[in-house]
Image (cartoon, one colour):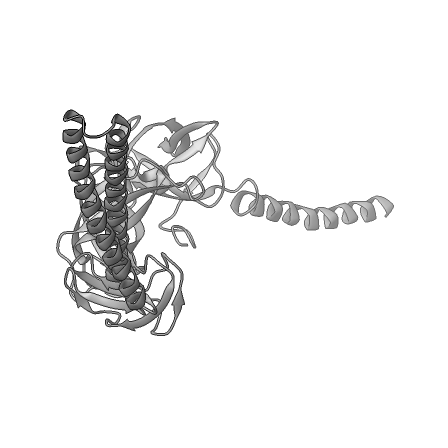
Length: 384
């Protein structure tokens, strides 16, 4: 009876343990660590690509003119408003002359006095020259002494020196008068170019220091987009390439542009290349300075070759490659990556051939020879 009881207990235990073991093995091979890795695959195709670069930028003006006084003073009037189109030489504003008119009159009086002194000095020279000549004749006739003749000569030299000093004083007075007149003219703020008023920094009655801007003026023809491109993908960016510009305020409108130049200095903080992109034709209405814009630069097309999605490119042990399917198992294959387009496709220069299958997305990290389960799609794959 004891033996029969022991056998029944073992059988009951086995009846419980065996299903549990089978369930454990089933779970381990289907959804546990021994389960195949779910992947999506893609077939390598031969096709040509139209590569392009995408960047963000801001609308800026190549030339900005800040017009203000060259001397400190108070604004008398500002004759333009923001958004006005002005002509070259047009009056934009004027500073209060304060005492300039009185100073001009005073300097004119100083100049008149110097001219009178010049005339007086000229008369003295003429008189001294006649006296010197007369005493020279008297000395020749032995009618006067040599000392008196020398005195008249010294008087002539002194008169000539006085005349030269009067001339210098007159020149100084005229220069000061011209300088005051020029400064009086500088009180008028004139437009240096034909352009657009984009800012008005001061109103009449405001006191400004020399060099402080009253209005800002730009040349609409010099407007461009200061675009930024990621250094990783900026290979091939060069002057002369065509571009498409989409302003933030006009997302449905694509404007033609041209890369004017690539800046020799890159942004080391954001790791971006800088380029200036011109509008082929200025948009109407005129875009605000500082508006954001999307810039797409077209690169030269690539010839036909093996192409895979960029998501299939992986890095393993310092090498760039793809997980290629060989007899249903993954094998890491190093490849040489070429250019790509904005659709996410990249060209493979070496390492793959058309018709081969590579892993696009995987549920977890792959290893050589692991079991795979090819599915149509993975939840969240390719989404951000």
